[in-house]
Image (cartoon, rainbow, N blue to C red; front, side, top):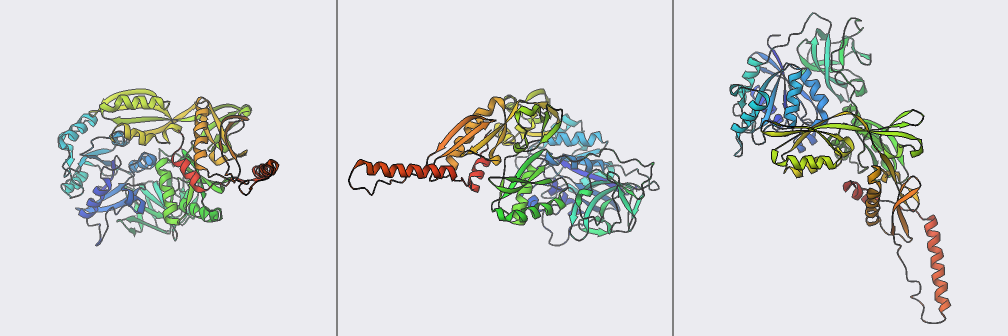
Length: 592
């Protein structure tokens, strides 16, 4: 065990973490001939966007040592997966971009690693770029985290300059595992994926004991038992092994057909369960925070959408979904996501991998509604909100944000957050920048908050957030009616004070987006039985008197009366069909 080192690479998104991983694989001979860049990113979207969205471990052999690297996601949406991967390590490489310096998630990930007692190796990346400021970044690291200058390694992951020094530092600085090989077997599930032939595959860090092939195993959280089909490690391809020992990182092919049986952070043990055995700390169930409804553009393709989402959920245990129905859009699926980036990636995968054209409703959050009877309901979409007369109070989720920005933009960002119902908790200088801590309703965060923040700070600000509780809110449901018919897919939940403004803006947009019909269409926004805004889409008008060439005026009146009667009948029985363009126009330019 003295020859094993387990470490993670942590960084803010886009600081060069995956490129550095490629160089480490190259130096230790783990890259085969013809290997592409970003070898650890298995998903095409990861390569296209240049981000890591799925944790991936790999075993490196260097100078007789077994180095287990766990490549973690960099985005805040996948923060729980990062914390579980850090719990599986004894050390971490903290990567900072020499052109951007210390950012919000740099700080957040550092404190996660420090609280778990990890040994941290600071690395400054991208020193080959002309705009790199190594001296300033070094001072930031020393000021923010108290590192000594000699501890910091300056590298270029792209060219490979000084990368070998990191491997030497890992062996020298990071301690070996201290677990007990003779104790009862316990393994930490860091993440999981799905293989169509081998079922759910658990990525495991062995904490105590030994797990062997064909040995009956069990999950601590749900008591599900199985016999593994295969045990092994990543190098970076799957490589079968007869056993996994304490201190090692690898995979276990469970053969289970539902990935949701494997919970991230759960403890894997040998069955039957030892009553004295305790689960590993830090486990929690992953809870979705953002909810959307998705519908196929062609209603006949709903079975294909259902099949695609089910298949995708086999690979992504964080995805929760159920079927729904809309009068305007037909059958659809309601999905819960970890955040807006997670939602974007899932929608992109449904489009690319399954060739589905989709309409997605505006994102919403989990409102907690207490009825006058004392019952508590969780409302994920506006259609589920009970009648106002039945509601005692509505509570919305609150997020605590840490925004990291140059001092120049601090006052504008604080003002912007206050406009979004934010409450300033504290502001302090860290690593030459301003760290602002703010409480903000999650509903304000999931719209265009991140884009506006980047715009206000010229792209320099970054944020990290976590859900910290619920607070009461004066919210109501605004219904949208077309020709007197309720369209649930366009309804939304708004603050009482803003309901009229948002309702007026919505009907104005609908008036522009909905094509004219042969009959007049009233577009209304209503709260309960009260209409708060209305616009009218004028009907196409045919000049029925054009064929007249003379005669008495009663002939003209007779034709106009007949036309009016037909229009009235058309309005009574006519139906407004909303095409996908209407929804795409509204949802891309969501009313804020």
